[in-house]
Length: 68
Image 1 (cartoon, rainbow, N blue to C red):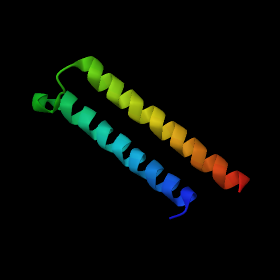
Image 2: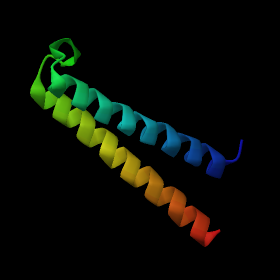
Image 3: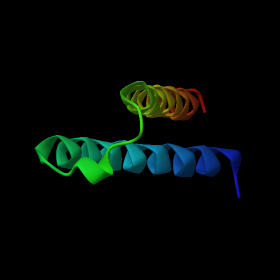
């Protein structure tokens, strides 16, 4: 598998995880307390890490496509 294709696959996977985490946040806020993690800071760190990973991967994929 080409490195560019692997990067695109990783970026799409992380973007799907971001969408899933947004659904998880909405369901947890809507009244499903069993969906909450043990600590709020852990939830915040998890979501921010997913968003940063998505931003970095999408940026790298876009740069590689415009330069290649």
